[in-house]
Amino acid sequence: MASAGRTIEDRLREEYFDLLPEIRRVTDQLETEIRYRLLGISGNLGGHERLVVASRVKDCESALRKLRDFQEGSIFDVERPEPYTLTTLNDLAGVRILVFPRRRIEEVDRELRTAFRWEADPIKEDDEVLALKYRGYSPASGKIKGEYQVMSILAGLFWEVEHSAMYKPDVRLKGVARHPAMVQRRTDVMQALKAFEEQFEALLQGSQDA
Image (cartoon, helix red, strand yellow):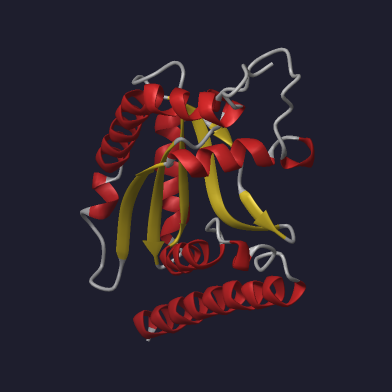
């Protein structure tokens, strides 16, 4: 049970800042390793192609919200005998690899799977894979898991905008992301982005074959 005047959130915030140097080490090691492993691809991109490696450390409040959302009713149980810990999260340290065109995804994925051999946890929507995601421990820590994602740069940039707009702790935005109309529009955007890339690649291939 949490001590009087000190909430579970207070203890988890303290844990987060104790873990932060280790989270940063994992993030730096993961980004460096990925960039190294992808040199053979990034050094041979065509003029229209892109490969972007971007790392991020999950901030304290986002980590607390995610751990809370995993609990029944999205609340912490003050009577729980064992303490909650942020080390159960898989994405405190993360790297996202964004590529264009999407045909490069398979090549990048194959290279990184050979190097990391981590647990796969793809991001899906209606049985369609939107992003390849892997998680595991790096040489930088046996406590903090790292996570990397491989996805289309168009979808990745859209997700950045969407997350910034709708997943902040603003009461006015509560429920917006889950509203049926917004869910449908989000699906429409993702399908349109995929169709754009597929058409681009088809036309590019046609011009090369001509």
